[in-house]
Length: 214
Ligand code: ATP
Ligand code: MG
Image 1 (cartoon, helix red, strand yellow):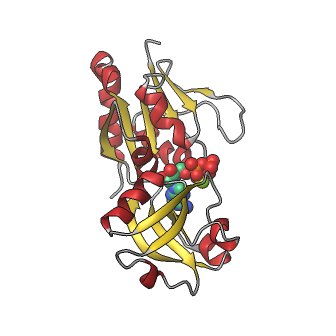
Image 2: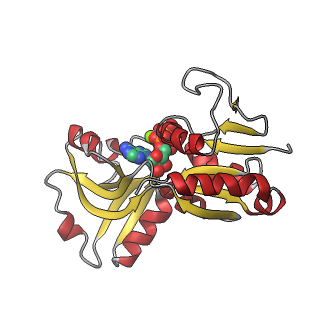
């Protein structure tokens, strides 16, 4: 492909990326929420979008199947970032990575150095690093979604999950007890593509940079 391919996930990342694309003069010709197409054209013959699972975005860009992509810091940490140039924090899809427990669970006691708990999460790398830095022993249980359920049915004592309003935690009688990090989405670029197609890619990076909201 002589043009450029941008990998995006449906939902919040796609929605919050639309104004950034517009700033670069790029307007998608289909809405991924309505269309079943996985390759979406734009007003520009040399720019197309591919719709991927959020966790797969870094992989498409790493292997050059997409030249650029937008992925959450959470996803990038778990992926490792190999082969990716990350020029911009886009300040979209903002949330926090937190430790949460059932209301009443004594996390302070459990988190003393030497303490041991079971933690269910999709974010195994970030969680491992966080608890190791605290000197805590944790048994990590990898899940792929609905982490809130795990402590309610005895699968784990705690979870590590993304929190924005806290509504889902509250609805399941859980509470956030520790912030691990602030999360937002970043622009990721295939390093080889940047060299070969710089005249197409650099203007997109520059337009995004100019449109990022503080
Ligand atoms: P799926 O929901 O299809 O299982 P996903 O959870 O990986 O996939 P999204 O829910 O679209 O995909 O989340 C994409 C990114 O948006 C996440 O990687 C994270 O960075 C961010 N995010 C997730 N949840 C929230 C939230 N509640 N508020 C703001 N940003 C969020
Ligand atoms: Mg989600």
